[in-house]
Length: 219
Image 1: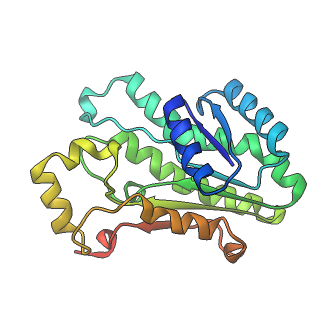
Image 2: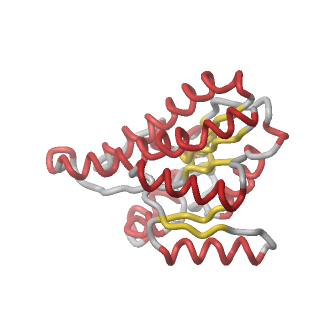
């Protein structure tokens, strides 16, 4: 498995967790918004592992700013990380997957691919794009026996949501609005990712699967 991030501490943390489970891990820093960086990452991956069977596009970024106060650079950065990067990384690994006639690509979408809230317009636009990227790639790649799906988390207790978790009023709203009555835990995403990466999901493609404690289906 390949553990990669722009920050070496994240790479080391992820690699250590994987190796504790007996997995052989390749450590690599990379910038998913840079083609040159991705080419270097792919070369190292193929050198160490020989192939790419499964890709999980999990990089994400958000900045909460009202639309009228949004700078162009903020829009560009959020779109690049959340939407362009999954396309670029997928593009990098696809030749090997197509040659092998097998592959799994899992994008991380969001509840915001279907719903919206104030101050996160670029993020909402990007995640809506990920949903459609998933569908388009799924249709194009199905003849090559490559399945492409997206996992769409709702409100999860992560560092990205730290400001919301610490906001007493917003925290209460999430718990009240979510039928499950709580925030999601990051480990609750892993099971779906494992399923989608397995042969049990060989006939599932193009899906944007919500994990949101029921928020998207409740009034």
